[in-house]
Length: 97
Image (tube, rainbow, N blue to C red):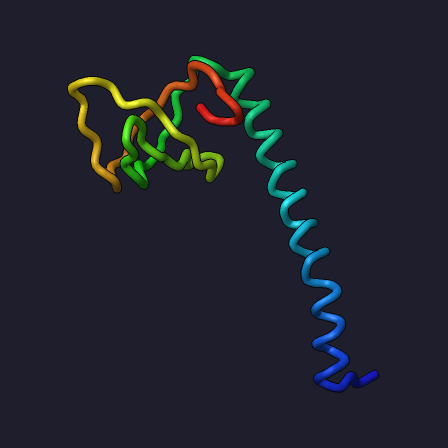
């Protein structure tokens, strides 16, 4: 069956929000299981890259999980974005490390 452009536009308007909701659910489900895994492996170390410098924290990406997290700054330690670091999971707070 061939659809006219107008019919496809109507279908897209209907389907697009549903597809976005499914993607959000999928992303949250994956994040849940990653955080559950990390909560059971506190004290282990993981490689990460610093992607952003915030006021009192750094935003990082854990390589093994492609998970974005925030870590607190340590006094006297300066880390620049792009630097590869090793982080230890000590605790999870609201889904963050």
